Length: 64
Image 1 (cartoon, rainbow, N blue to C red):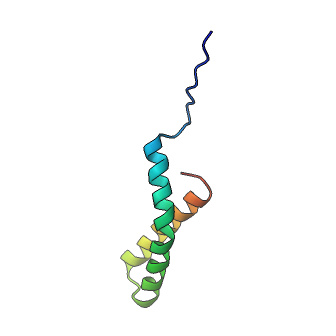
Image 2 (spheres, rainbow, N blue to C red):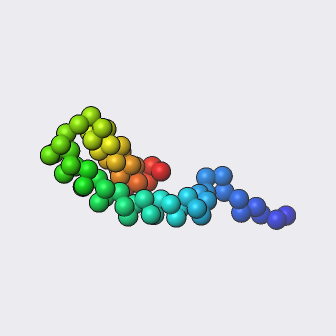
Image 3 (cartoon, rainbow, N blue to C red):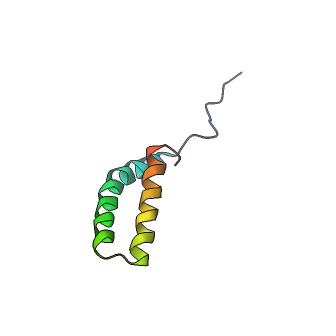
């Protein structure tokens, strides 16, 4: 009997590539947004910083 190599939770190649690209860009974007939020704190800046931090933490801990 042939063994099926299909794994239900295996990520697609395009997803892995996009995750690697996002991992390279999220840290500089987060640092820039943090500096911008220190000087000009608006609601949009704070929300964007929170979103960037959530993405950075989720990539770091392999949640996504």
